[in-house]
Image 1 (cartoon, rainbow over the protein chains, first blue to last red):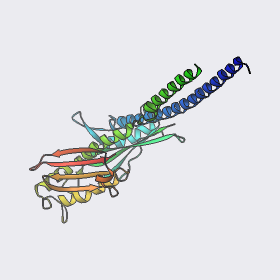
Image 2: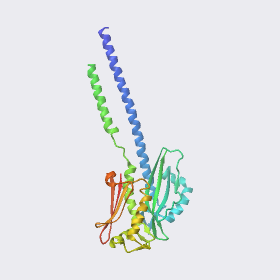
Image 3: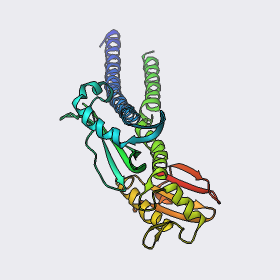
Image 4: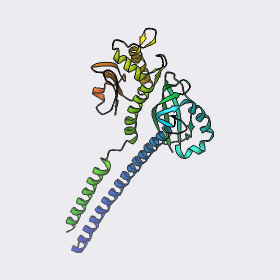
Length: 158
Length: 158
């Protein structure tokens, strides 16, 4: 074999090894990118769930107030009764705010009552379901008493 | 010369790998929901609990029952039902609330109400030893004014 031929073979071998390494690099990069996209999706779903829980907990349709002063972490039972009848009928109005989610209130103490679902737009097929529990006082304005309740927000991603 | 080229390429690839491992693979996923849940949950639990009305105890709130229990440390002065004074009422009802909330959601916790050196109520999840399996926790402490300040402490394990 001539010297020029040997040098050509050497160059081809180097290029071959180089392209194999580049190929490995691409495969590795694609995998990292995929896992990064998945992680970002999970983070977005978590942020979405927190956002919905916050909006639901501070919904003016439910909040307790006295002399126009809002009490934080409190749901007025009279408002809850009305809202659980009105919101499901007008669900489209709330879908921008709550998206794919289900929102309901449970009384823990003194009773163990499950109130009617406030909002239910849960899809039949979903990718993730994140449940957020928000302990909240349930105020009965007629008895002037507070019960221990939990606002449950189930947020779905498709 | 080709060997030099290969060496430079290999060094660049190794540097890229180190960069990817450092910033992509070893990057801890941000758990927004967990952080939010722990911080908000602890304060919401205490706020809601202290505001709750005990209808059996002349309609007093849990805050007032804690004050009564601290001021009359033997068993309290308020009658809740036959033979049940404020201290015993708190000791029986608070675990029920936590069983139906944090314990039901599989969240390890440790609750304590102390007045000076006296522990009025303490409760923890049945399967949780906070000193051993709960190294990272969200600690919330609420003081209640009384003859001796009452501290309501709730640790939620992470």
